[in-house]
Image (cartoon, rainbow, N blue to C red; front, side, top):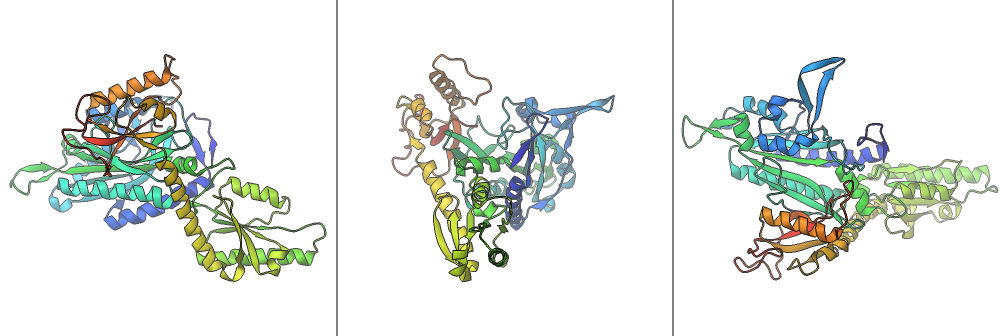
Length: 484
């Protein structure tokens, strides 16, 4: 999947993982093009002047910004930042390109790398100094158009996780404290890693309101007041290579990777078996010929297949090799299978096995891959749902439930001060007087999102339902947990 590099926090993506990113890119690009989004590319460098135009925005990223200060042995006249995100790189151009309502909507997306330097403990795919992502930046004449796109993009992110990666997520809105710096509001899809009991932000779609438009003077002629200017409404949205890490942790087991078929570099591996010292050259050729027929049959059926005919390794070694790499289906071909015109099929994610007729493989294998994808999602969703616990009061064992590797759904007042208090209080209880490990993820609870899908059984009663953590009235059921 990856290899280490001599710069801390940077990693090499090998073909097995980069194929996953390529499949995500192919799916998402096709969908946003249908929405009318166009592809582009902007430089990776940003001047200090442009970066500092939006105060709240730059404060949110300031500790993470990497600066270029030298060229050879000479100091630069002005330090140049390496992009942590591209709002301040792209929007000066938007101000030139957008002059009237006829120039809108402006909807651009770029696939690129970003650098965010300051953090305590790098983790492959999840927390890296350089990572790949797509970032969309759009401008509209009206808030209604902008709001609609925020949710359209978030739905595509949900589909990336659930339909492509077979990972269940919860779509919702971020709290005021957790929203994008300088934005109006942030929506998110939140994942969950059962083995660690921690949530993870999957992707975000932000409404920037008119804040950046005011900073960068992106205006059009006001439709209602002739001769006057009005500011555009903007969005930004992004998905990163973190997706790969989330998928690995949700589906992986003690044998290694478990890959959903849609993103697997190899969906079917064909392994010859039953070859011994007594096997004649003719019998061996017969087995290899049958293996070759199976592989050739797969490509027209849209199945990515590979034959492992290495003579220097035993079948058992090959089984382990491909299980560890997460290949969804293993087909075994031996003399007895050939005699029956069959192959033995072993499924990676559940270990089940069966005999498949050669003559029907062109239809059986695609159907089986579709079923594996659905079964993996159903299994992951059932596991996630079993770790989402509804709580009505902090005193109902809030921290103990978190310690049990769970997330919590609780009625909340949506106040910033209350969220801060819950985080500090839950951390104090969890640490029980011990000093916090600066390199370890926080033990305090935070809001993950306010789910768009609110409980229908005993829902919030406005003005009646109390916040689970304070004396104020609850506004929504909010998802809480420890996160990466």
